Image (tube, rainbow, N blue to C red; front, side):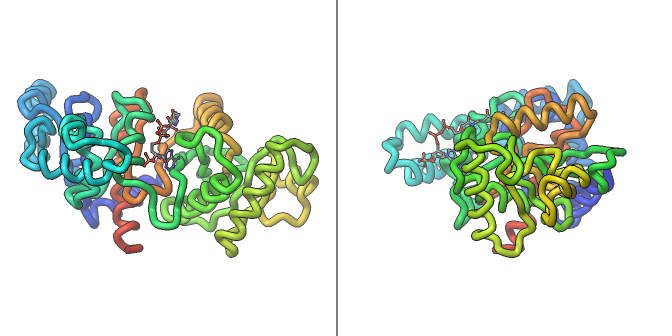
Length: 337
Ligand code: ACO
């Protein structure tokens, strides 16, 4: 897990402000305490301050005293954020009165903090569903310029496997867009390659997965992957990308050579792009549970600022790592701008 240590070191070297809207959630508080102690990020906790302080005292989490704690029900920026939310969503029919109620929801407050420049990134999902975490982010923070679709990647740490020489694969989309169009899938492929470059530091070799390799099967679902591959190549001409490929053709050199001879990706892919969310979500969970891979994510790609979701089964360690990853994404985004 050298890569995670590098990510943590980068976060420590340029501390970002990360907001944790689930401030009264026990694993979140434990992770916050360690993150503050280790100097990984400046932590902002949302929730009732008295309850947060009581929980921290009960668990002897002494570093929580160094977190900023904000209660969205009575934070001093409540009116400012309500006006901002109203401004952003009035064309969707949101009234100021409705915005005043919505800002009390910590998941909305966190996104408004980021939009207003008061925080650099957000991690949530230990007690909220993916949909509830993502909706305010999609409505308020929105996508990066030139990107129309948000997707979720996992870093899959697969140790001692002959088909994964450096031990890491990137899987996407495993979290957000249920049934992407060909053009959305093309964008997801480019975003996944960028995630691999930014976080893994390796030259991406992107496989567009299907149940067919190079025309072995005919179906509209295969056509979609072929078209997505074409679009991704158009969007990123320098990218090593190939499809459509079956998973074995993507990962196993002998199968890749046989089914897709001459491909720069087949048999040596390190980024796997799944044709639908169904395939991606099932795929990552199978590899995690059956192959014992460590799955770090979902890391949201394509959002204008980092918001990362957690699985509700997450551990304290998962939250800690996702905060460090969000900090790296924020550092990267600031450099880009
Ligand atoms: N990329 C960019 N923008 C998007 C996307 C996307 N993938 N999806 C929705 N939006 C935008 C819409 O354009 C809309 O913007 P607007 O209101 O400004 O016009 C806004 O987000 C809300 O869109 P809706 O369609 O109204 O939102 P919806 O209720 O459908 O929610 C969501 C979108 C939450 C992403 C939904 O598609 C979803 O729940 N996806 C699956 C999430 C999930 O359950 N994943 C599996 C579990 S994760 C895991 O196991 C780790």
